[in-house]
Length: 125
Image 1 (tube, helix red, strand yellow):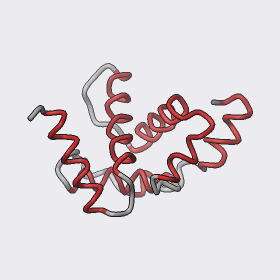
Image 2 (cartoon, helix red, strand yellow):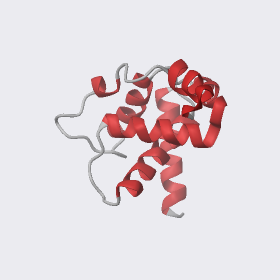
Image 3 (tube, helix red, strand yellow):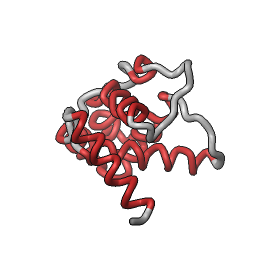
Image 4 (cartoon, helix red, strand yellow):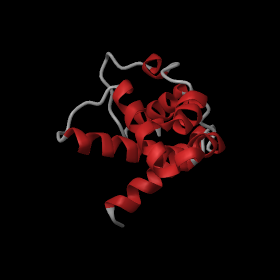
């Protein structure tokens, strides 16, 4: 079994075990993290704020004006939900955290309505 297939299966298992979010949300966060690291040009720790920027940008690119609807369909209604997904992946030993990392790093970082709809249609997307 390839590493990619094994990783995908592990992510699926985390989603099933958590039961709050669709597996697509976990895969999306994983992809956004990889993309954020690639854009930074180095392998390093990514803060919650940096990851949320990467998630926002990827959601705009991938889903355009439907980003909020897609995320909501996956059970992701606010930035804290991304934090729960990240910490589920940490608990499953798929990601690591530093002692300074906290779920609070993801709390109320941006409003989905504003970022994924209002700003998008105002030319920010």
